[in-house]
Amino acid sequence: MSSLMTRSVRASWGVLSRSWHQVIGSTNFRPANNPRSFYGWFNSVFNKYDSDRVAAVGPDRACAEWLLRCGGGVVWKGSQAVFTDYNALPRTPSRSTKIEEIDGTDSCIMNVGFDYLKGLTELKKIKLKNATSVDDYALALLASICHDRLESLEVSDNGTVTDEGVSSLRKLKKLRHLSLDNLGNVDNPERVLQRLREELPSCHIEWPPFTGQSDQTD
Image (tube, rainbow, N blue to C red):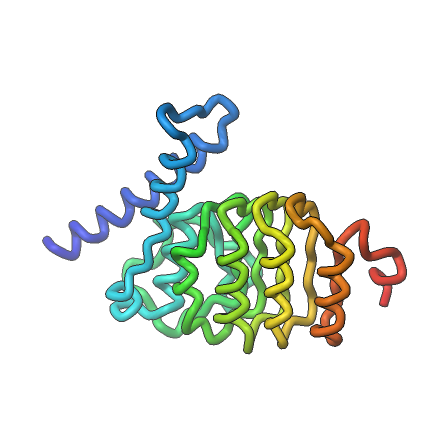
């Protein structure tokens, strides 16, 4: 009975997560009484790190559950498809199933949950497009946790991160491709770009319009 109840709760959580993202994605959604506080509280609930869950099912499965709760997706090693359905996760977790890519497009992932990135030994690529809850601290955490394995990163359509957060990506020494775009709160993108190029000489960086055609074809 306990196992059945646990599966039922997790399935319901997945449905609630998708419903929540559909609601907040609506232009008509206007939460009353301090909407910023309400939104932040709800996001923190979905992002809460659960060390017991990590110990029980392994870091990759626990991380996948976190990402799917928050509206993101994963690409398993050996696959090319982005997996996004929380309720389609296998009932019996396999520790041999590894995350190779993370798609955080339009998700509400935030720094509170970034500890889930620890232990992802096969992680190579992260996409953070319109993941507006990702702030400077989240990027700094990502760079610290994934410095020895991440090869490709996209951060785009984000008006929250600043020069400091983007500059922290210089710690990703294994990075080979970095895509930056539409980061409206970065005050001096040319200076940040120069610093990234100096400290990541082996990384191909795209940041229109600050990287030109010659950069794209190198």
